[in-house]
Length: 399
Image (cartoon, rainbow, N blue to C red):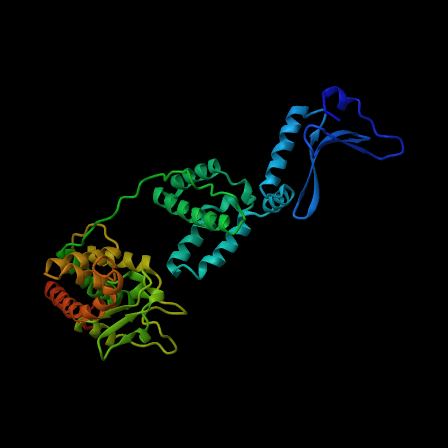
C-alpha cells in the first residue's frame, strides 16, 4: 500500500486476528501496526543476523512524513553496518550506570598507573569536589552541569582547586569513553576558571641559610636538607629507601618506578648528604629511610608550618615558599657557580636535547663524574653559606 493520511486512517484489523501490519510501497521496511488500542508506525530491518522491528511512534501523534523520515534514518544506519536495536539496549544499560560506579572502576584502573601522590590527588578531587555527581547516571552529566559545578568549586575552594578538579574529571571521562561507558567527554569545551601562572620562585641565599639553620634533628629536617643538597623531588626524598642507597659508594639510585620521567636516576651523594644519612637511625622492619608505618614520610603540611614558625622566630625575613622551590633553587644556583647546563639537567633527571636518543644512554655514564663534582661543589657552597655542618649536633634539637 502507498501510505497516505487517508489510506492509513482506513486500515482495520482483519477479523479473527489480534493485530495487523501494513507495509509502505514507497519505503520498504516502513509500516504501520494496527492494534486494538490504536495504530503505531514501525520500521523493520535485519542486523546482526536477526530481524528487528522497532516502534517509531503513535500514528495520532507522529505525522506520516516525520515517521517515514525517521524510518529512513534507521534503515540508513543499518546499511552502514549499525544495529539500532543493540545501540538502544546499550544506551539503556549506560543510563543505569552512575558516576559513583564509574569513578570506582576508574580509580582501580588508575591506581597502578599513577604515582601514589598523583593518585591521591585525583581520588580526592573525584570524591570531594565531584561528590554532587555521585548518584547521577553517567549519561546525564552534560557540559553545562560540569561548567556550573566548576564555578561552585572555585567559589568554595579557589580557582586552582577548580582547575585540578577539572583535570581529574576530564581524565575520568577520557577513560570512560575509551572503554565504551560514555559517548563523549562533557569536560571538553569547558574553560578553566583561572589561568595558572607558572611559579618561578628562587630562594635567595640568606633565605636558604635560614631554612638550613631552622632544620631540626628529625625526619623532616633531614629531608629538607637533603632536598637542598641533592635537588631531587619532595616525594623522591620522602620515600627514599635504604635499598636504594650505597653509602660506601656515595650513591643513591632512584628506580624508574619512582621518577617522574620513568627513567632510573643515579644521584651522587656529597659528604654532607652522606653524613646526614649515616646519622639517621634505621627502623627495624622498615626499608623506608623516613616516616613511620607502611609508607614513607607523611605530615608535610604540619612540618612545613612548624619550620616556617622557627624561621620567623629566629628573625629571618622570608618570602612565601614551597619545598618544590628548593629544587628550582638548586638548578639556578649551581648554574650560577659554574656548572654546565647539561650537567644541571643530568642532576635533575631532566630529558632534553642534550640527553635524547642513543646519545643520552652514553652521556648518562659520562655525566656521573660531572654530577658528583657539581653536587660536591654545591654542598661546599651551602655549608659555607650557612656556616654549619650537617651533623646532628648542629641541627636544632626537638623541643
